[in-house]
Amino acid sequence: MPGPNVRAVGDPVQYHPGQPGGIARAAEPTIERIAAVAGYGPQDPAFRVRLELPGRALAAGGLELLLLPLLSADQAQRFRTSGIAGKAEVVVRARRRLRRELRDLGDGARTVVVQRQVDIAPSLSLERAAVDARRLVYDVDDAVWLSGRQTMGHSMGFLKGARRKVRWLAERADHIIAGSEILAQYLGRYNEEVTVIPSLVDTTAYAVREHEHSASVTLGWIGSPTTAVYLHRLAPVIERFAVQSPRPVRLRVVGGPAPCLTNVDVEQRAWSLRAERDALAEMDIGLMPLDDSPWSRGKCAYKALQYMASGIPALVDDVGVSASVVGDAGYAVASSAEWLEGLHVLAADPSLRTLLGGAGRRRVEEDFSYDRWLPTLATILRGG
Image (cartoon, rainbow, N blue to C red; front, side, top):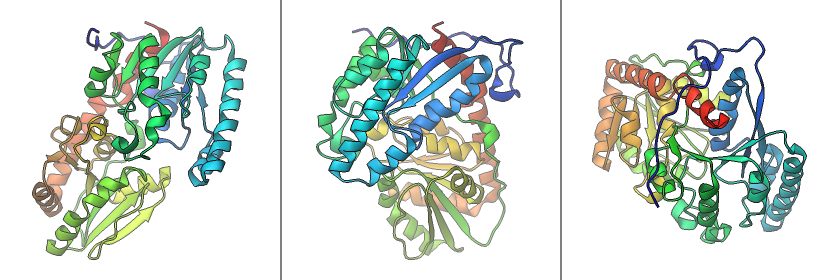
């Protein structure tokens, strides 16, 4: 198969930075409805970042994303906390509801965006129902063709048929949106029409951190229960840094279980928008540890983008696209010794943190913001 035709496409609508979403409203906009389907739901970071938040901004330009997640927020909560029988009941009910919603949609949307997958069961029946007689835009922001232990998931995860599902959707897509060049290269095996659009940041929603000398140094991490394993692997480095630091060290953890540390003031917070923003307002250094695996190399460095949008220097493992995303807004490191050195350098100098944080904010505004990418996204959704 030929490689991906990775390209940028033209602006679909008038585009004005400073207006909501950067897209000017026409006097009487024609509303085009697009079904947006995903295997999980509103509490899933990918659903929120890749569909829900851009959808609000796209509405200003006459594109309405009809959000149709498989799992509602209540169902997702029950799925996470139930045993095998409870999970099965949730999925059966959710699949029945989504099938009905797709049927009732009828001709109400000529295009469907599938984010990762439609169904978390191995069957392709819901994928077929979503794609039937519609243009398909397939959005991928992780190496979702991997499964089981490759993704730190259950060893029987391969039974979900993720690789087969990705290929089926990619081969039928009218256009694929990939979150990074690495993902685009893989998906290009199955389709020539691939455009890289990173996970986007609404910079107006992020206050810029002011760095100054303080009595303590605050490290921060935002993630999920599944990605917390990376933070736990970094625990010995954080502990050593705290022992060597001339000031007390604090660690703010949002969205996942915190590591147990002896010499660090650790505070763990369940994810919420408020908890995320409160933590960003306290951070001196944003942490994004990863392991060097196929799964991690497929990630789009969204944690780093959040730190950068907030004017916080990012300290990240040099894995996948991390270094290219961070650029001169922090440090990409490759060993425990480099992690330790980076922590000491950044903790010691608030003027350096201000300099790197400012570079990060500018980089996000120029390369990862709604103002930069919404026209391209809108053109793809409209079929331009």
